[in-house]
Every structure is written in C-alpha cells, then in structure tokens.
Image (cartoon, rainbow, N blue to C red; front, side):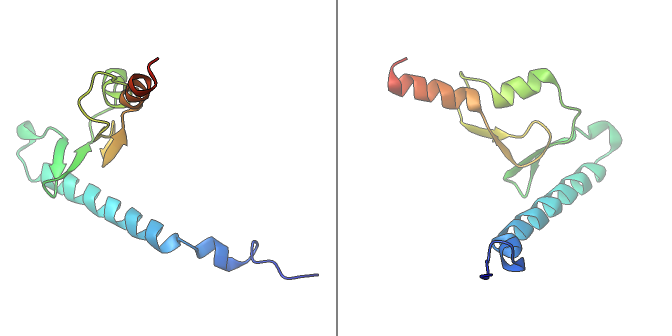
Length: 106
C-alpha cells in the first residue's frame, strides 16, 4: 500500500493558520463591538455601528426586511455592505446579479 497525503494530519492543518487568525480577529472585533455598546448609557445603545472605525456590526434581531436590503438589493450603491447579523461584511447578491445582467444585456 502506498502512502497518501490526503488522509494525513498535514491536510487538516493546511491553510488552518489563516482561518484561525481570521476567526480570532472576528471574535476580537465582536467583543470590542459589544464592549463599545455596553459602555454607552442603556438608552443610547443601538447595537449596530462600526468598530475600529471601519468594520460594521449589527447585533439587533435580524429581520426579513434588513436581510433583503443587505443581501438582495439590486438598486443598492455597493456590492459589499454590512452583515444582517454579526460583525463584518456581506455580499449583496441582488446587486451582483443586476451588474451581470447589465453587462450581458439581459
């Protein structure tokens, strides 16, 4: 029997360092966003905004309206926008489809 790398432990860890780093950064940003909100007086907490002056966060209960606005809005100005829930960005697939249709002429 020949040796195969596909079942080895090496494959399980290949690229794992970057994934682990991104996960840790995301968790750190989420914690920073929660701390930012908790430092505000209760009546001023919105549970959405930006952390590190750039990264959007939204910890409000997700709604279908917000999901549609952020994930499927062909009329939006940008392809990338805030996530429906959590920290970071999401792709507005409605805008992507609209752009492809414009280019293809459909």
